[in-house]
Image (tube, rainbow, N blue to C red):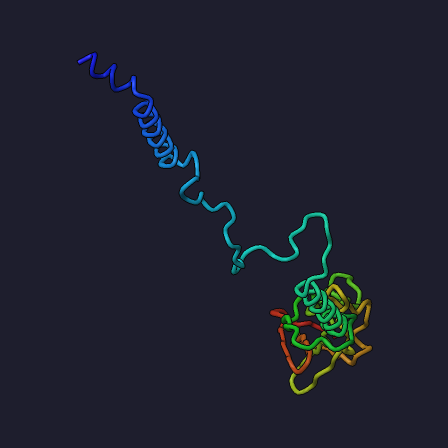
Length: 203
């Protein structure tokens, strides 16, 4: 047996054939493991690029300021809003138009003393009307068919207006019991409030 193998490898032609077979087997192994690419192409390293839908913005470079259409539109919107706000008359100084402002029912000390002249108290009063800023407020006094009123005034920026140290006789209040009513008006709205106590004017 050994002599047969020895005779086989002793022939130069057979040695060459053996080397060729071994080489072919080695190349086949390398090809199958993608180590070499002699007989087939390698894997693609560059894939075709496709546009991304809904992906990153064109203006995504950090540290760079780009004038995008959205920023222009927001600037335009801001300008529009600011110009609209500047022309909006709401919450301006008293006496100016305050359209669409909610009117608060008047409240406060409509008179400072419901029994003036008693126990040596003065016959003068101080009245307060609290309501919505810019609203007109007046305080009226009713006794039977007679009604007398303080002059209407506009509520200031804090929503209050005052009548200080007015005398009973200055508006024609005669002795008797007077029902007190405060009325606030603003842009067609009217709210009234009645004092639960009457003003008692002495004889």
